[in-house]
Length: 428
Image: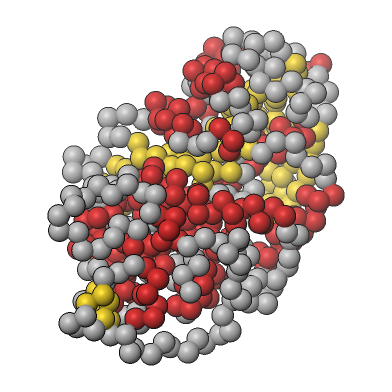
């Protein structure tokens, strides 16, 4: 398939987003060049960075959730729109050659998902640094005010009035790609490290067929530079409340942990429950309403010394009470958590916010990939392709969020115009 260079560029239906400066966004193709090429040298027709870059641009507009749609997006592109991808130019035919669907499936299946995820975070890093310096705005790049945009603005104003957080937090959690299957019939799982707040994916790793999330915890965080993890608080669910994980974080990575303790750690859970909680006052609480329900949280904290767990310094009991609108009955849940941070380095309010912020990985990553990108409906099964596409979806989500969009579904609809897509990734 080739595209003649004389093909006209379609006139955009809306005014395109003003281009960002070079210090804000890097060339997507150049960043993806850091991914090692697993192909043999003989027979290469397309450079490796061009294939994931085309996939990212093609999957950005709404509805393009399959590799078939990716190939069609490339086939319908004009020559000026393809000029920045480094595609081969056929002098005889007078146009750029574009990859077929078969080529996308074959090459993406050979890539290492961890390498793709690392390249994606390297691409988003300057945008993250720029976003941290800018004040929040209520308007999207299109000048519109979304419902989610208003909510995000209110939350940003509330956060500005509250004491500044002394540490960043990173959530580690796994996700099943429900539609994908390996040749032996087993499901595909991906373990990710996601920053609280902005939901940026620092690293991701596919979990092998004959293992689980626990052995992959350290290899996942080993993919992250020390500068991006030092002094951060790592939040995990009850599955990862392991002694080896706590030792690794504190002694090898100079990081901190906040572990939720449940029945899977029976001895430790029993010990936490037997603490004199009735004599310990509630030192932090909040009351919130939204999404048709009201929720109250009460936090109690007790200082400990190791407590059969490496480097443990504080134990929390968080009581959550929820009530659906119009109902009188409250539903109560009690959760215990443990951290290595002493009281002078982490207040009860900070720890409670980290515990609640752990759901960032569910609300801003897993939900978006499942519902907005249709990840669970995808039945792509070729080699590493499911995990690689998950990493590409994370990059798209991060790029749209850092461009000023809160509603990712709305942002994908806006980027039906190719000019916007190319401008978003610095390919104009």
